[in-house]
Length: 242
Figure 1 (cartoon, rainbow, N blue to C red):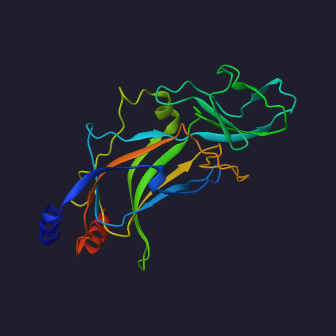
Figure 2: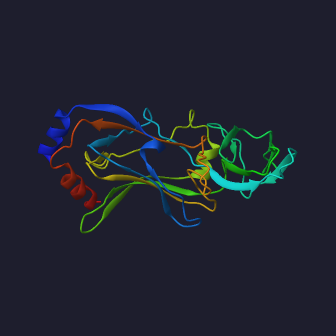
């Protein structure tokens, strides 16, 4: 392992932040632990740890409705607990593929929103921050090996995270069980998974091209300029030791 650590120390690297645009995203299976995003490292990466390197997490729920098409104000009841988010917009809406931003009004107590509908029938795509309990985890994954290995590196209840002010109460990784625990070798994955009662989508199912502009999935990291020989094997062995 010392040779690998020496090569890591000698490899130039730069700071980066892993965000949804760098992940391969997918919708969840409601009520089951399922993948919603996966980042595949194209060089060696080291996940940053500690309170001074916070991760940021807001994973909105998705629902859709239909306007009456007469230009009137319409209210829609959301299925899940609509909360006031300290870190992002509580709700964003789209009419078809047209981004509207926040609704005309929001009633957190009633879990409802009001929009001013257009003069024609349109699908209202709604992405909103829910306060319901939901298990979230990040894990390192070693795909393609005979025995696919993985290791959880973070877990939390999104119901608590969504209600907290993350600027004041930051979430962060604590990966101090070994020197290699924070590393991803080339072609390894960092996978985000969730068990939530609500649907998580990164775009709508209708092909309108919408997106949850209020979502946050930011993981600080260091990116090496190249692959580090021997790192994949060393990380795999390290994961198997826990």
